[in-house]
Image 1: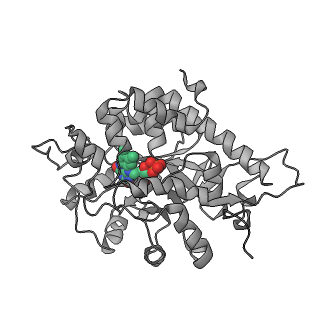
Image 2 (image 1 turned 60 degrees about the vertical axis):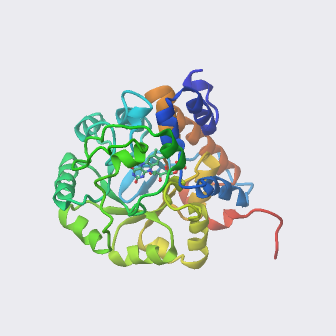
Image 3 (image 1 turned 30 degrees about the vertical axis):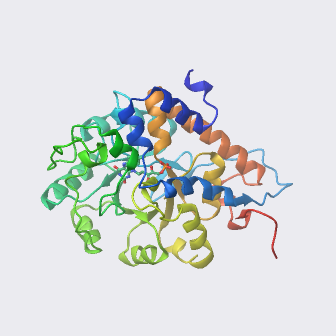
Length: 363
Ligand code: FNR
């Protein structure tokens, strides 16, 4: 069926399982160990329900927003995820063009399967993108890359910090696929034995990461820095102290530390215990977003925008650029419906008291 026949974001996942290669499906779907966190990321959203407000004129409205100085037509971004070509021959370029059509910001993975030049030249005039970096054991390669993306006109650097050590991505390891290393991540070697896609592409990553590396990045780019993979209030606070412009509460889609907490729960914890942090930096989240209602819950709790990883990879795999656009259409419709039905006509109208723990009121 065509992209128009997809009504829910989950429809893309269902189709992806049917039509993607085993290598792509197992790499995209896979998560750490027993996949407890990957499932928890989804389930946790069920523990929050809306407290809808009524009798407000909801005829007109918009869902434009801004995060870390970037404008977005809907409060959603493409989380950086590797190897889009495993799903579709045009790879990340489809994500770039789809994002351009829909006015959203794409996070480009350092492990993107298209070259940086291909991706950057697929943008339309004024289109904003973020570049995600893992630091290379050979820091001179990281410096060269930071300088290159800055020159090519990225709008922010995402520094992903939740992968300092490897993880066992069970399905991916079992599938034993072997792939060539992606173009922007130089300095790495293909592993001799096929141990899955993750192993094959991560050889260059440094395990020696410290808070000093934020200064290292800042020394080599003047772009705003967003730290991705924050999983505790303590580290969120340290990010604020380090003066970064944004954080993404994330557990890498459950692909790193099994039993890491669901990001929506961390966001709720931050809203309850550390509301001051929302004033100090822009807070985003990703992991488990599968509907517009999920987006609205996160926004009401204080997120400036939320990211989706697998959904865009699946949609690109099943329908290419058209699939990417369809994901945005579905999100736009669901976000609009949800916002209006809880009495909000703009992102600024979304307040923490519009979302609470599910279940009967305990006063
Ligand atoms: C990722 N993710 C990721 N993150 C990152 O910072 N750099 C990367 O290269 C990748 N690569 C990657 C590949 C694949 C196949 C997946 C599924 C994920 C993590 C990604 O940015 C994001 O945190 C999660 O995908 C969010 O969870 P959902 O939306 O997939 O539930």
